[in-house]
Image 1 (cartoon, rainbow, N blue to C red):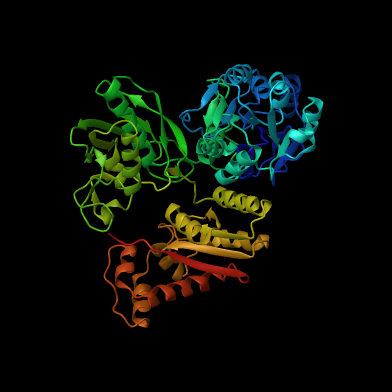
Image 2 (cartoon, rainbow, N blue to C red):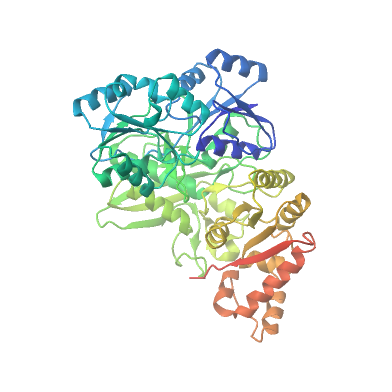
Length: 577
């Protein structure tokens, strides 16, 4: 069993991630009001001290704790740190220090600094639990507290003897407010100083800081407490799941992984760090395309080459377990160049969005690598990426047909490998549908990858579920649940052509692009049959009627497994370069 300590935005995310496993887990909150929609989670309410937590974990066989509690919940943090149980800390994102703000190491330090500055009126945004701790200050100095409009919060204020007329309340339980709202509140209060905690982006810290800076109000910030170094830290959905998979390998039905692009990025960063300061990092943190950070283990050799082993996920990819390496040489012209190392292919045909003659390092991995380089230096760099045994691995891929010779491609659009192509993936897909139902989604979209997800989310604003190639299975599952009012299938043109030919599984092992179908549809639309190497090139040579006809055929075949209800096909345009 897994025990989550929540009551925060991060806690809700942790519950959503664990719900995808389809297995029971515990979700514990201090208060009664945090009602998180869960399909498989069991909600525990009420604070537990260290002894109670220990007894609960022993009795329930807790194998891993996900600590997603507030950064300042030190009683809980200390209790969890004393257990002999693996802990994954789902950490918030904390912005850099605010220029001009006064940072305090704790409440006592904050009161000392406030007394030295002597503001006329302090607005305290530290929450109801801070009222008693700051009593020596507010009993002698004008202070207004803003708290949640909850019975337990109001009770804390009364018990501390704080004047009720000097309380403000949040408009909702999320506690997040826009910068303009914070400005308006500070104006109405008439304060000349604000005290808040370093609560991170999800705690609304940035909006409070920006409002105070805009009004020229003194900002005092209580720094977040330091947590144990031996905990495993995650900062988002992907890194949390990867951490849980390592701590409790049998919790999720399938293991996720990191792409060759993520591995190449981590190896490049480690090689560059070694080149700049001589250190040999054993682990580096990189940013995924969606902004989330993940940490990867790195091996360094005496020549400055850094190697990352691509972990074993349950995706049937030939690169599982391969060793991706990088070497870096700095340049003085500020330009970043990619060089072909042994085991990485060379592009020999147009159409892959990479210039002919360049190493087969795809666009998104290139962007990830360049971003990490720029985070460390403004100098240029020659980056050589290689894969041990990559030439042999490439023989088991489609690279030779695509004009990529000599090795594999460094790929990945999200940085994450989502497992597919077996019964466990279908089970995972159903779990995600159940979570969508639990959180009240009435409209959903099935997408095949990151590009289609981005397009659908941007244009339609729908919750996206990755079905990859198993379009038929996804639609069957959604239809059997009977709870969704609208379903959209977002596809790139290559998978759409396969689906239009009746292939509800668009994996290359199960289907290929039917050029006879493409030619027939082209003739129906009054144009010549196209001659293309890649499906994306159809966008350049086919009229709009062609794509409308493809959508009609896709919809017809989808109706065989989703016979009634609102169902749409959305084609995602990816222009060929």
